[in-house]
Image 1 (cartoon, rainbow, N blue to C red):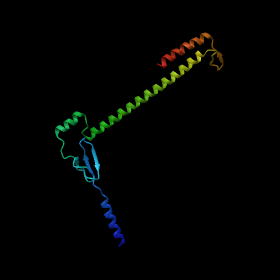
Image 2 (cartoon, rainbow, N blue to C red):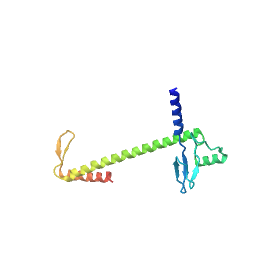
Image 3 (cartoon, one colour):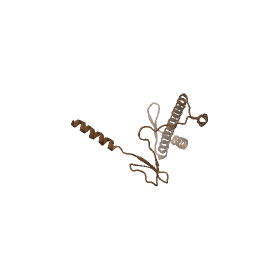
Image 4 (cartoon, rainbow, N blue to C red):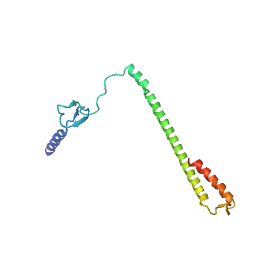
Length: 161
């Protein structure tokens, strides 16, 4: 008996907890939602109690289908699938081009850094040593240093602009 009384009280409490929601429009066209009814100065709109709002009952006319085709919108599921696949291919192509441009930019930056480092090494002055194919170190003479410096300047101009 106690269970039935508790069930009845819980059911009454749940039904009392449901609230009405009002949708009001002010003079500027802004929408307000409220638990209280709209004031007389605001326009009221009916809201669907629950669920999905009903779809418009107007059937598409031939003129509407022609307008849709003129706008380029897909009409059938097959056309929708083709449009989707085309968008995916375009996105993949754009992503691939962006990756390629990014890789080229990184390569150019690395080449520029290396050219500037080489030029800085030549312009510091002093003795410059290099290693030959046998792995032996030798020192460059002044004419080789000037040739290397000119080549380094050309590389900086090529890669850093």
